[in-house]
Amino acid sequence: MSNEMTAKTADVLLVGAGAMSTTLGMLLKQLDPSINIVMVERLDHVASESTDGWNNAGTGHAAYCELNYTPKQADGSVNATKAYAINAAFEVSLQFWSSLVKKDVLPEPRAFINPTPHMSFVWGEENVEFLRTRYETLSQSAQFADMEYSEDPDVLREWMPLILENRDPMQKVAGTRVRYGSDVDFGSLARSMCEHLNEQENFELKLSSTVKDLQKRDDGTWDVVVCNDKSGENETVNARFVFLGAGGGALPLLQLSGIPEGDGYGGFPVSGQWLVCKKKEIVEKHLAKVYGQAPIGAPPMSVPHLDTRIINGEKALLFGPFAGFTTKFLKQGSVMDLPKSVRANNLKSMLSVGMNNMDLTRYLISEVMQSHEARVDSLRNFYPDAQNDDWELAYAGQRVQIIKKDEEKGGKLEFGTEVIRSSDGSLAALLGASPGASTAVNTMVSIVENCFADELANQGWDKKLKELIPSYGESLVDNPELLKEVREFTLSTLQLDEA
Image: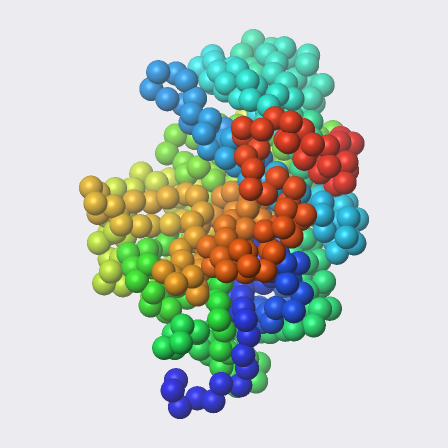
C-alpha cells in the first residue's frame, strides 16, 4: 500500500449506493455544499440490492402495525419503548424528505412515497387480548393517539375487505388502523437523491467498483483501494472519513478495516421471498399494509404481512416474507461470504449463536423447502379466498443479522441495526436490518453528531440541521405540541393525509 500513488483525495468516502449512503451523502451536502464526496458502488446501478423496490417490503416503519416492536411481557402487558423510539425516528425521516421536497431537491412525493394505511390484524382469543392491550398502551401516547381499534367484523371488513371476505364468522378477530401510514419505494428515493448528488460539484459516483483494501494512515485518514471491475484498474482514494453502508457487504469491509471496535462481530445471513399478485381485480380491493403475528420460532423480520406496493407507479400486492437460509451476504453475493467472514475474534460468538439457535436454523430450512401450495396456505390465514394461480414467488434482498460477543452466552444474535464507529470517528459502519431504511435519516444524523462534532459545533451545522429537521435536538416522544406541528408539515408536504 505504501508504494501506491494516491490518485485522489476526498473528505468523505461512502461505500454502497443504497438508502444509507445516499442519505448520508445528501445530509452532508445539505450541511456543506463544498464537501468533497466519493461514492463507491459494486454494482452498475444505484440502489440495486436491499434498497431496490422489490427487495424490501417498502413499509415506512413507524411501529403503527409491526407487532414485534411491542413484545408481550410475562405479566401480559406490552413493552412499548421500542415502538416509541422507532416512531420518533421515522418522523425524522419524514421531516428530512419533506424539507428536500420543499427545496425541489426531491421530486413530487408520489414518485417515492404513497399514503397506505398501516393495520394490524389478529385472530384467536389470546392474540386479540394482546392487540387490545397493545392498543390501550400505545393510544395513551400522542404518537399513537390517532390509532383506531376494532373487534367488529363489519368495521374490519370496511378497513381490509380481502382479509374479512369469506372468513369464518365465529372466529374471534381484531384489528388496528392508522390512516396515514406509508408505502415507500426506497429504491426510487435513493436514486433520486443520488441523481441530485451527481449534479453537484465535488461529488463522484464510481459504479462497478469494489473496495479491495482499507488502511489507516498515521495522520488518521484512510487509504482505500478501489478496483474498477470493468477495466481492472486500481485507484487509491485518501479520505478523512469512511462510511461502510454496503448492506450485507458492510461486515467484511468492517473486518478489512481492522478497527478494534469491530472485533467479535459476525453475521447471520437470512434470505427472503414474497408472494406477489398483480391481478387488477384483486389488487384494487386492498389498500393497506396489514401485519400479523410471527409464527413461533420465526425471526422478527418474518412477521407475516399483506401489503399494497406501488413501485414506479405500478400497484401490486405482496405477502410474506418467507425466510430462508443462505451463506450469501448480498443477493448478488457469493456463497463463500459467510465462511470468509469467520475470524479468530468472532469464532466463539458465531459458534455460540449457531448452537443456541438450532430452532431458528431448522425454521429457516423448512421455509426454503415449502411448496407453492404451502406458501399460499399461509396467505389464506390472511386472505381466505387466495388462489394459487394468482400469486407468484419473488425473491427479496439478503439481510445479515448481527452476531456479537456476549459474556454469558459467548455470542448473541440481534435483529436490529447498529452503527460501529472507530474511536476517532474517522470510520463508521452500519450493520443489521429492520427497521433499516425507514430510520436511515435518524441513524445518519447520529453519525454526523459523532463523526463530525467539530463541524456541528463550529460551522453552524446544528442550525442547518434544525432547518432540515424541525424537531432536531428535541424529543417527539415527550413534546406533543412539537409532534403535532411536525406531523402537519410532513403529512401535508408528502401528501400522506390523502388516504
